[in-house]
Length: 145
Image 1 (cartoon, helix red, strand yellow):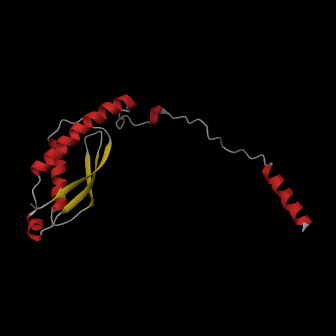
Image 2 (cartoon, rainbow, N blue to C red):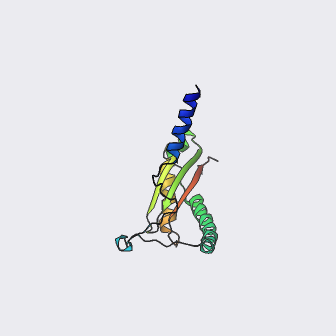
């Protein structure tokens, strides 16, 4: 038993003294800038610029929600069946002005499509936006009066 313990300790010491090089976590990375794509270069904002953009975004968000509330049309099928609820939507606005909209959690009966339509219309056609890469999760609520 004593020999087994001594053998295990000896083996641990030998293995821990290995001369194998372990990569450093502070290794430098060199990038050849001539190989970078010039067409997909987007601005990088510092924290002060981000605060300024965020303040502008609050106003845009308010305008977008106001536009949606004024222009949404309750789908006839949903109205007839008494369907109410919220459509959860994730949308991505890219710096090149591309807008990608995806219904994350819908309620059906035409409400998902109407929420997507009015949001796309609000984002693309009614506001003078400075496009930056953005992903937003929002909801559009349908309620019968």
